[in-house]
Image (cartoon, rainbow, N blue to C red):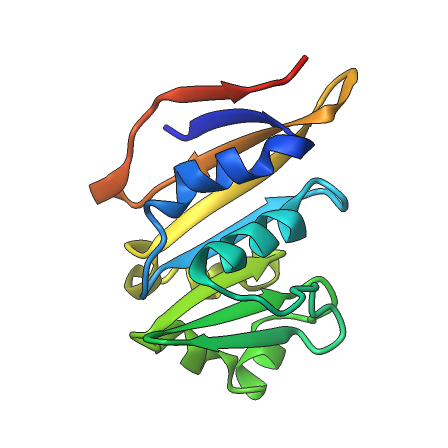
Length: 161
């Protein structure tokens, strides 16, 4: 069962902190949600927590941005425009999923869902699903599904109303 985190857009750092404790080398983090739901903002905070100091923007046209730090490589994918698994693999992107130093962050993972469904990846996927809160435009609901060894079902709320 996914963990639910409710947070205001101004408090995204607190939501990231709850998830970040599970993100380490070898993790594949999938970020799903509508346009503007907070996926890229979340990625920016995760990258900052690893020590990335350069601007982090969604690589919509390049598909991949890479940030190399001491002992870790962050692979940030934005697959909004990619046609599917064949195109993903034709660029050699699957290699990133196997880098033991890698932290893989994938926006729009549905574009390669059958690839990510393979058992070799399933035990490493932290799935994040971002939702708007009806009638509260400053709030987001984040549903976090951790691999079995990390799963929990707590709910956290960060709201500065």
